[in-house]
Image 1 (cartoon, rainbow, N blue to C red):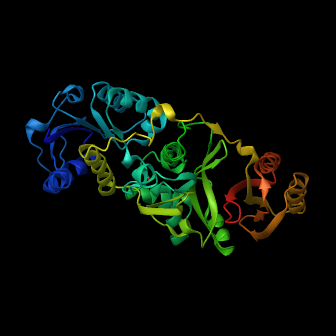
Image 2: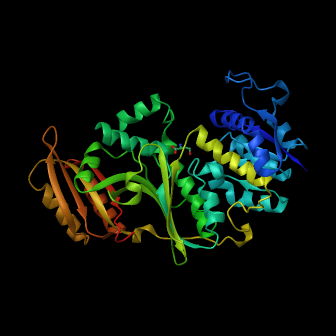
Image 3: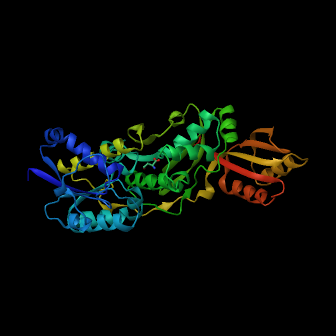
Length: 431
Ligand code: HSE
């Protein structure tokens, strides 16, 4: 066969960009792969929508089911999104019809990736999803192929551009979360329903995928800690800065013997740590393993250009005959997961109490900490409005379960504590 035919299902921002970039670069693709790449069909919910370019009528397919059945199509490109619904049907049925599949759909892969990779192997086709993690950064192929000789033990980074943009703007413009979110929505950086990004679910799906690839385990797609950035206020960012920290939403996965410790939560990170200065929508991922040591990958984590770059890289990888396993190893070789019990996590903790400025507040806080074997490293109090005060502290290394017990006790005292914000501190000495 001297040519490949693809069908693109989903013509939103990304689908359209993939279409345009394949058209624009078709002669380069031919030179670099040795094959001609034809877009045989495209399908979208509304084919009549104005898209600013003319797509020939013969390419337009009203019914996506015709694409996944079309015997001339070798590769189906799913760009609809969503863990279930049409996207799921497209991907499952295409593979059953022995078509290679390329998708940018992290939610679908995080939820159904194990099952899909088994199906792909059974049907002798590729299922590739480079665009699902880190936008344009070729992180999946780097781990699967570039680092194939390594045993990885640590993968972490900033995997969500929207939240990184919000945190950057909060700091730059001295604004609160809600105000920056509103602006970000107006500018199109955040979705009208921002939950997937701001509550950490998007980053969670991405670290689930990387963790499975990096550690050769089945996908952990629930039961692990996922916290977003809604609770963070400008006071937290300022206090962190005064102590030499930045606040970032990190997705982290570590291999600790047979255990995988995977989580997503905001962190105070030392200003001189690699990912502390990755701002705006940029993503950065640190991958640590033996024998290579520590490597960092940085680049645009979202947007139509970077995402289309990753999608086309998957398509051409199939054309080049790279018979890749979806997760870097045969699905039957994937190990079962033993998830680390996060109650045993050890960290320094930042805690801010918005409290009534009355006698006894500090002693209530410190006696609760002492009772739970938590020792304070830094403490500062600043008056706030209406007779309130912010008491902010950083603990020495403490156990998560002890911190949770303190938070539970003090959160019950509603008359005294109006708000309690806890953020874990990522200290270089103990990652
Ligand atoms: N919503 C994602 C982000 C981009 O903000 O990073 C797509 O993965």
